[in-house]
Image 1: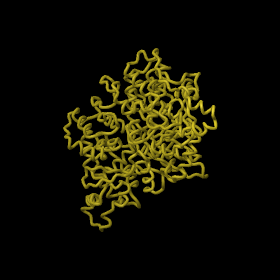
Image 2: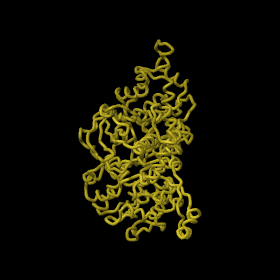
Image 3: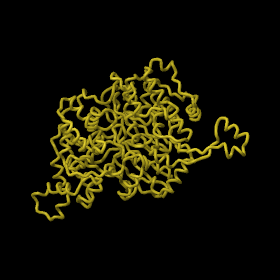
Image 4: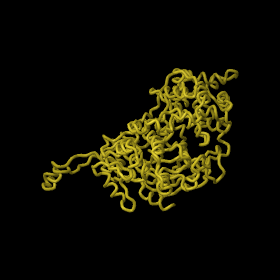
Length: 633
């Protein structure tokens, strides 16, 4: 590890700081039973437990309609498979190389033995109830998040433990090969001796703020936003970034419910009087205060979290403000190398006076950028910008500022994309659900162009609505009426808010550009079937009640019209019928690529595309993770 990187890394270890609050949280979980246990063997229990999480619309939605254009909702437990078995992860994945290791676990580069997809495998060993809770929370959160700038979780493997305390867990996620934001900041300021341009900073911050806004709207607090936890998909300057490591994340409402009440001495004049009159002060000069669990990396903590007060999603915005300072100037607003440690940095953060941006560092920075930075670093959370407010700041709204969204001129968005969406909307719900499962097997090379098309339509919140579809179609001279746009959004998964998610768009767009192999269709059938057949009773569970009995009858009739079968057989779908149904959805792909083709040479890193090549050659540590207990992987 390079010396500069070691020095920066030494200040970036996250932790659960307050043991008293931690113990209170554990005792609260014991009292509440399954409130902190996000997994159960029974699928219904799992969803019921998740639905109790405040702030997240994780309760399965019931959609009553017989029209093919209405969305099918696939259970998140089906999209992200859970496996339990000794060494089962090694049966399905070949581990190519280690990315990093630490006391808590490792991150490995893995290749799927059947599909050939390259994934990152976060291998963890949990030893305490708190560690198990952190891992369970991270899994539960990643399963419900559906955003282009949040790391996607594909599979989870649990190994039976030889002891009651220790258990191995493997999280299979997207593999990001472009390094982390910490490296890119250091590369600019310590290697190139050249600052990042405001346009470059704005381009990357838009993506980070979009991910933060998406999480915050669902009541999720990341609690460990920092440059280490922002990864780039590839090594290009315009790479998509991903927010990672939700090991310390939590649901704001649940964190508030687990807060404990403590007696604190009053400050200022009443506090001094309490010291003079200790007996009276013990009764009259103390105040009851809510104390929430403190967690995160000391150098990026918000003052309200350091003070163990009541905090919410605004705590993440303070962290983003510190990151913005580093991106614009290479200067951390509270840390001086070789001078400060965690304690001195926290002492600076909790000082009530506002953060002053040094003139010598910000003299070449625009007033608008300085204003965004200053308002994100506001010590009072009530006055601090939210993610949504930050994105509406004039600095981001400047039309001359580069943006990753709405770039239809790049050529990634064309009529074929919209034709693919229409084709997807015409499929029945079993076909659409199957395509969502099949999209989980796509390799990064296949997803990249589809993701670019999604970002070309999106205006920055990570979801699509009918107006965005219609406007994007207009820009590429594709005729799409308002009614057609609304129907497409409804088929893609639009809820009562009429917005469609990222994963559904990828599945729909891939249906017209990727030809899935028989092996992939077989694995999809195995996920949907029980005892070798697909029944309506199981589908209501797997599709979250979004398919009616009449719709199921229409699906089964379409593949049994010319067969002599008993009524019971006609209501079930076996492998042959499933293949027939999916054959009807297959189209000639414009690029007939399957995920079962070899994607990388064994042991080799993926080759970067675009520029700058020098950056890739210097990026010797393309992926870095940090575990929930503070151990660096």
